[in-house]
Each structure stands twice: as C-alpha cells, then as structure tokens.
Length: 264
Ligand SMILES: [Zn+2]
Image (tube, rainbow, N blue to C red; front, side, top):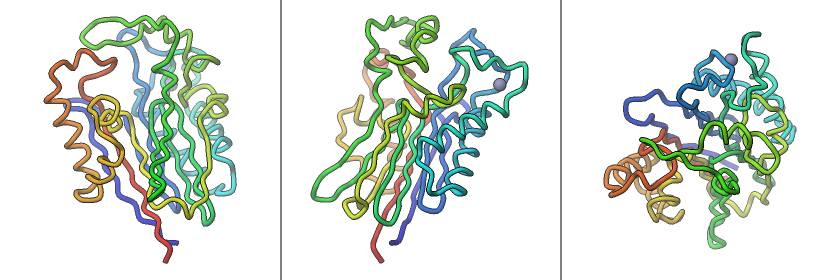
C-alpha cells in the first residue's frame, strides 16, 4: 500500500486562518475553528487559532502514538488534553467556549476509518461505486433556529448557547469531551477506496452553495491540484449575486486534504 497526500489551506481575505490541517503516517485531519460571536468571550482568554492549534497537536500526537485506538477515543483524549492547556481563569463550562469542527481519516491496510464532527466533510472515492460522503449537517437542521440578520446571517449567540454540545443540538471539539462520542464515525473496507478528501466548510460550499458535484471537485483536484479548489471557491464567492442569502460568512477559511491510496 502506498499513500500520498496533497493539501492546501488559505484564510479568508484579511483574516487569520482558523483552519488547521495535519497529515501523518496513514492519517490526515482538518479542523475549522468555531469562531467567537462579537461581544462574547466564551469564558476563555485564548484566541481561536490557539485552541485549534492545541487540538491539532493533541490529535496528531494521539494518532501517531496510539494507532490502534478508536478515533472516538483519540478525539476524546485530544479534547481533554486541550482543556488542560487552558489557564485556570478560563471557564470551560461556558457553552460558547471556543472549539473546532473537524474531520479525521485513518487509512489501514484493510480499512479506512473516519470521524466527522461539525461542518467539516469527508468524501471517499470508491471508483465505479461512486462517492461516500460524510457531512455532519446537524447545525443546519436545528429546530426553529432563530436567524439574526446583520452584515452576516447567523444564529443568535443566546440560542447557540442552548444547542451547542447538547443532545439534539450540534457538537464541536474543544471543551466537552463527550462531543467525541457524538461525532459521526464509520469504516469502509480499504480496497474499495482509491482516494479520500477531507475539507472544511470553506471548500464544501462548492457543493452546498454553488452547485458542484463531488465528482467535479475530485476532477478539478486531479487535474490542477488542491490550490485550484480554493481558487474555485474564491471565484464562486466573488461571482455570487446575493451572498447575504447564506447563513455564514461571504468568505471563509478554506482547507482541503486529499489522500491517495495505491496498492504497490
Ligand atoms: Zn482559554
């Protein structure tokens, strides 16, 4: 088995990149910082980028050092280690405390494991059998969620505080270890898969907002590499006739990793 990786990440224009990616021996991960709301501290003095980096470091370390552990166990350990990194003054019981959505893929000799939490995505190319897509869209299907109309359409922070990291709501990695058990996890026999894409929602908006199919995304990656996907996102965003119609930012950090597996 031979594994190669391609990857690209870019911040939204004029902002710090709150996405994070890492690859190791047979695994890859993407994180997307679950940003603060204006005027809310989330009980924590740390920048989102710090929280995302801590999560990324702990996940990478667990994936490298405990390759036999279930991904749920690895995610829980990484959340607990990240919580321990905060200062004593950080109130991690605040429901808006900073965290990240994430996607992890691990390629084994006989199978592919994945974990997805929040609005990151995993897309497995199964050749003639098509694509298996894993997208955690619970945040898009919250019952009676109130939308706040402003410069950006968004849920109100007071509402998010009642559904974030709660059963029936949605989950992010950061300050609640149980979020790991609420992630979407799965396994496919490895010979069925030829390549796997992981991305933040800054990339998956190509399919969710702009009418692309995953086969279009994979084909562009194949012909022009991962940066071409980010360019395609920016082009679609710039040409969007009505960006206010979407919940969320006009431009977002965009991150993609593609794992290609061949039998040597
Ligand atoms: Zn903190």
